[in-house]
Length: 244
Image (cartoon, rainbow, N blue to C red; front, side, top):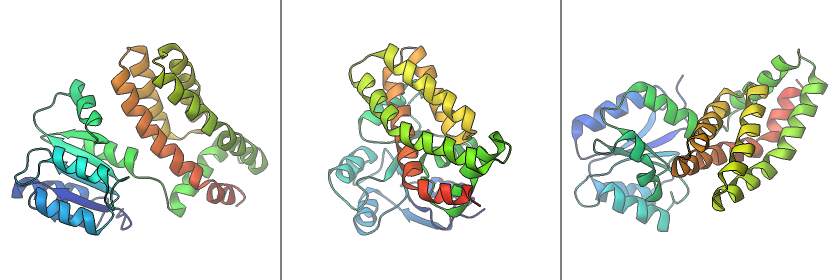
């Protein structure tokens, strides 16, 4: 399925790398802009807002590291999801890139499964199809009882902001035990509601907290926060779908 509302920028000074990534991402979007180096990427980033920005960290002119700092300092894409592309970072070192301002990281050679994860995590749900998906997931859990489903959803929408605040405060206070308690409840909630995209992130957050990996926990919390804010922003649409 082509998601034409998903605008993407790819910046890489290697022509073959640009082409391969664009071909792979073509499964999700037909709105893909290619930049041949950091300077051209910065020009595009000042002119248009993108849903996803993929930056090779080692480019001439402006590196990915320099670009993400400029983006976060002020541009049309200050709040966009920026993904680092590198061949020189191990999986357990991804949090170092997160600290530099990236939302996530892809390690070369890029495989389709990794791109699927990126799209699932960072594409904020905004379409009618997404609203229907969340409503249908709940309806399956309540045997198509729309009134009961609406009550469950309203309870989720009411409690979710408070849980996110508690979780962020626990992470800021380095209280792994409290953070794990909240994360475990969130994971359980998303399992109950059948929200597979949320369940995956919450599960990884819980695993990171169990392992005592706080930088990774922060990474997954940020991913979860983006998804939750998008869901809360579309609650009216979800409830409308629930009402049929």
